[in-house]
Image (spheres, rainbow, N blue to C red):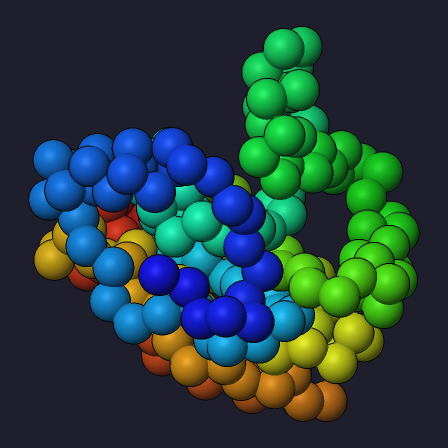
Length: 190
């Protein structure tokens, strides 16, 4: 169950449906989202398409209302409509210039809002994270919350909210402490 101020969707079917599937798969949720109206949620490690499946089931099981970024080629046609219904925002990486400012503006207008981002930006191994999550959180004045997909224990672990500072490198180092390669579905990719 989400805290009262967290962005949420009222639905009669989402929680029981997704909770049953998570239980069947042996997954559980540790911790909770913060009792805040607005925040940026970062999810890692992101090494497999299964990350989306389990993350989406957690999203449904909690009744969480969030917008999440997805590569525009991943949501064509009717799948795109369904994905947008559930909060997807298709991003064309070659034209992603104003995404940060658009979300800063949206945070300013919204009473409650969460944005979910995979900071790795891809399922492939990367040396550094994309910093859009940090720029959005800093400019919007909202905290960053971590969600670690731990395949070794089949848990999704929520971290405490952290304020973004001027030092993005230090913030990333601190945030990365919530994640480890052994958690990933494919550890060699993290």
